[in-house]
Length: 287
Image (cartoon, rainbow, N blue to C red; front, side, top):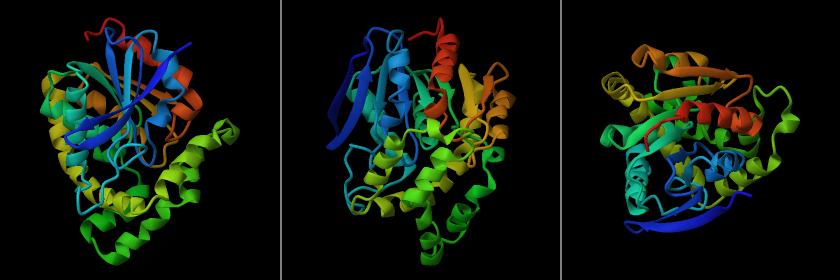
């Protein structure tokens, strides 16, 4: 049976919680979760990959069991999330690793690749967007907030943090919702109900504009370095559309693109298929 270790480490005064499995001598895969979840989203994937890889799944700052400092003590931006996670990889001794990027994990992980392209051996993008054509109309209320960060526009987004909205994100586009475990939804709702967690998430929604502004830089990185890349996508995702997956091949002609008949949280329904695709994709990759 797979042994998963649950650890915490101090990163420049910031506590980061993470899951770790597999032998440290095997190729490392850094698993970066999205909104509004945590490393818990990888609970089904980790046992399927632990025999072949060294797996590390941190909770991003302000998410899961990682530190949740007050907003006047920590500026919740994607630049700062990436800086903390970048230092986290150094503190625990990761030198080279592939990255699995999902949702918020995409702009976080791609910032790591921009900063240290020599460290990133491959990229698995599971509904992790880097192209404007991948953004659906579901982003319209958030884009209005970018253009006009008024109190009214901020309050209009608060419903996206509700228990019903979180459940909808998990179930939308899934042909059989009974396959969605309620436990992950309940855990996300629990974390969202912590003091100030909603304000932190609204801060990050505002700062998401910085990710779109970086899309040209991410795409230049793809063209320049031609990283080994698999885009594996739930094709019913209400936020990140299939054209966002296909666009990777414009900059990385050798990129592999695969679609799954599911929604945003593809691991909830297709963990086995994603694991098989990763093992095939990473076969022979350097550490």
